[in-house]
Structure formats: structure tokens, C-alpha cells
Length: 164
Length: 164
Image (cartoon, rainbow over the protein chains, first blue to last red):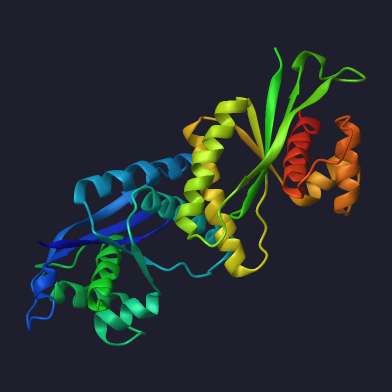
């Protein structure tokens, strides 16, 4: 039986996601089979109020879970940037945490540095290095776009790398 | 037709609420009739994970709205305190904003200083002054308890004071 990890990069304007699939029985193989199921973004309508955008995140994240049926969710940890922005992102993140709890989905969290370290081997990698490493690791023919979807795949892949 | 204002003081551990009712036609009377419908708190189970607590806020706030059918919601604005705490409160607030948007409820927001100013006449009033003023204004026989419920009434009353 294969298992799926949904990676999420939560934001208010755009929420990136990536879904990977693997066979837990083969996790320790020298060349374990890990596949990309899909990746994309949930975009919330610009110039509408926060409440409407949070409704979009709530509805669309439930739909993403319905569609991909993940076994585990991996989320990028929220760090403090600018006050106003952090509060907006934290509000969006609250809705994400709500949906995961409503669906009884286990989740793991990783800092940006942990993600970079897991994917490229060093915690200060830039965006291009991370995206190249994702494409290589997941045998993708091109770099996943947009950036937020690539971030979703990166955090999903980090959960897979860090599994026992 | 009377109208109702639901005041909310959002937090992750405890969400205070207060419901007041008034007759819009008599808003400009010398002694307008303003009544407390109810007040209380939504408490989330301590020592459970954030997701479960956010589920409680989501479900219970929908129930509060079902029960009291407010026409307007008044919320205390989130200020930055400590980083970790602010992110937790902002996550809870995200769920509150989601519920209000799902119910198509209009809302207004006030800072703590605006609330103190409206209720007592000065922005540096302490908690006891605010609570005494609420009890007097709303003709309550005793100070509403707990503090979070009193804060819910205070922010509801602020919306009423500041209405055109």
C-alpha cells in the first residue's frame, strides 16, 4: 500500500501544495520509489476582505484533501517577519490547522532552514538550488511552478527524508 | 425591530463574548434602551493541541451565532505582544474571521484603547474602571464574570457607542 504526503506552504494570498507518494515497505531501498502525484496552489481573490480569503482557503484545502487523500501533512513553520504580515499569515495558518484537525490528519512542521538542509544538504541554499534538487530527486522534467507549489513539494519531500 | 451586537474578545484558550440588544429607532433617545442578552466564554481544552482547540472555537462560535443571531459583530483588534503568543492568538482569530465570513456577518474592530475610551471616557482606564462602567451602563446588578466575558460586553458596547 502506498502512502501520500501533502506538503503545504501556507499564506493568505497563495497556499502552495505538493503531493508525493511512496511505498513504505520500500522506504529503505537504495533507490526508493517516490512519485509526484500533483502540485499546485490555492489562490485567494486579491482585493477582497480577509474573511472571504479565509473561506477560500477553508473550502479549497478541504477539496485538496478530498482529492488527494493524504496520510500525512507536512507544513512549513511560520516565522516572524513583519508584524502585520505575520498576523495575516498566522490567521491563514489557523484555518489550515483547523481543517487538518477537522480531518484528523497528522502533521509535521519544518523550518525553512530544515527544509533547505533536507533537500540540498545545506541550510542556506537559495531558491534555485532547492528547486533544482526537488526536480532531480523527484525526477521531474522541469522545475515545478509557481514557486509556492515548488515549496509545497519541498516541505512534503522534507517529511519523507526525515521519516524514521 | 431590535438589533443585536455580538462582542468578541478572541483568544486561543478562552474566547469571551457578550450580546447586547437595542432598538435602532430609539438609538438617539436621551435614555436609549440597551439590554444585555447574555455573556459568557468559549473555553478550549487545555493541554490539547492547537488544531483541536481551533475546532472547538469553530464549532462553538457557530453555535453562539445560531443561538443569538447577531446583526453585527464587534471584535477586539489584535495587538502584538510576544511572538509565540501573538501567532497563537492570530491563528484563533483566523478561525473567528472565517466563521464570520461563512455566516456573512458584518463586523467592526476596536483597539483596547478605543474600547476603554468609549466605555469610561479615557483610554488608560484599568480593568476595574471598565467593568464598573459596563455594569452601570448596562444596568447589571453585578460585574460580569469572567473577565473575558466582560471584555466581550465591552467591545459590543463600544460598537453601539460608536454607531452613527
